[in-house]
Image (tube, rainbow over all chains, first blue to last red; front, side, top):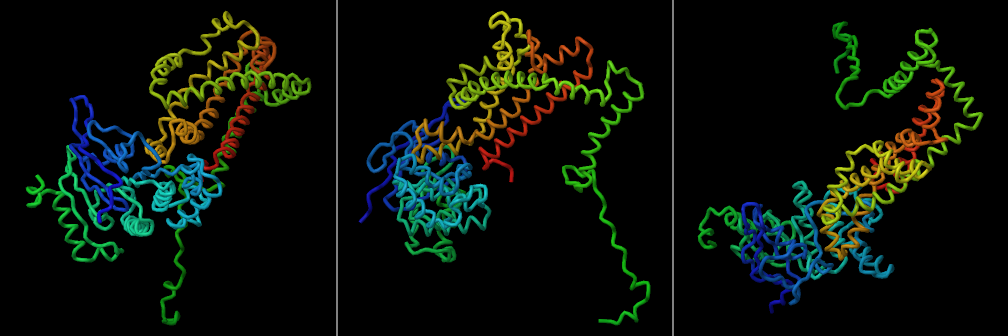
Amino acid sequence: MPKRPALEIRNLSKRFQTKSGPLLVLDDITLHVRENEFVCLVGSSGCGKSTLLNIIAGLEEPSQGEVLLRDKQIDGPGADRGMVCQSYTLFPWLTVAGNVEFGLKLARVPAAERRDRVGYYLDIVGLTNFADSLPRALSGGMKQRAAIARAMVNEPEILLLDEPFGALDAQTKQTLQEFLLEVAQKTHKTFLMITHDVEEAVLLSERIYVLTSRPGRICREVEIDLGAERDRNSRRTSRFQQLRQDLLDLLHGDTPARQEAG
Amino acid sequence: MRPTAQIEPELVRPVPRPRPRLRLWEIRADIPRRFYLTMVALSILIPLSAWTGVTYSGLVEPMFLPTPGSVVAAAGRMAMSGELWSDALASLSRVGWGFFLSALIGVPLGLLIGTFKTVEGLFEPVLGLLRYMPAAAFIPLIILWVGLDEPAKIAIIFLGSFFYNTLMVTDAVKFVPLDLIKTSYTLGATRRDVFFRVIFPATLPSILDTLRINIAGAWNFVVVAELIAASSGLGYRILTAQRFLRTDEIFVGILLIGLIGLAIDFGFKLLFRLVVPWAVDP
């Protein structure tokens, strides 16, 4: 039975006013993310995917269309949509535990419960031993893990990930992709991630939306039928390679796929 | 292994290891600590011996340049009579009050200008203009408006540091990464939370650095402030000494102003370590 959508976007468009007139960035985007689903938006740079994520987060307003979170129109940013950016956004003046605790403090969660929940998520991201460290003592990968814990501790309806591993070196990136896969399998949260890394998208997603550039338009929805039981070795399967290649072709737009999508 | 006896004698001789070359002119590279300390010692010794040389040899009149000995003697005399301490205290209290008020208004205003475009439009163009008007040029107006008493001197110090405090804090806010603010919103922060719990702590190191740099300017301004009908203070002491051609006392005043400035700077660096240890360079 299909789960009901946690997030729905209907006919969303975004136009920016520029010196040379209005610029259409997102054109008639319609998509949904089901509960507990991991969905990726894949597109090359300039397809407006960050703008789309900002709109979902409530940080920007759409020019047209609507964003529904559990059937309710969103109104500004809130803790029900956690976000992790590509840049490091830990508060440098707070310890790792303090960073994770930030949202709970804002929500006036009692201290004892705060401690429990922070402890639980630090354990999930494997940073229990770094609870009292300052962010500057962490490596890039650890910083992103802490940022993920900080977003998850608020128990948001959906986690918005804006190329969270984009700034990491190739090896750390792979490790963190596998880490996120595990986290998703363990916590059964709902994820919407944007990335331009096709391999990352295939490994993590159950579904992928492919966006074209200028303006950003959804050109294809791809089911990733690799099953729920995945790990690092899933990358080696022929099905994985095939999906990866198809998506790459789609993105580069030099195969018959292009005519289908057009 | 081959027995050494079979090897030609000259081959057995240890090859002299090339001595590591002493590199003193590498760009931004470290030099041996001993060498660095020598340079520091020279930086004090060269001017001091030049001063000693030209004064004791009689090359320069003591009225223009007193001997180091007479400066020390003057310092001792002024310290004994107590005037040095009361002058230092008077100057410190003026600069303290003037700078405190300037920080009290300038820091929050700078934070608001940096945070809200509306406040920026309201204040920044005017402050940008006022900044280029020399505070010393306002002395006649200040005398006219505030009078000749303590408040006038405090007002000069205030004027001399207020615009810099405000504009430098404004700049610091603009360096807070936008992603940090965006993420805070998605963690449930309200605009109020973002201002007090994100922007303020994020800019606190820059605020403290701004204050440290600008209090040096305010402290230097004490001499200008004490041009206005002062009857105490280090600036006043220097001006009086000049009138009586007590060059040695001028030297004592200037040196003490420098030393107190150095102490204030050190104090702010200490405060920085205590308040924002997370921003101290490792």
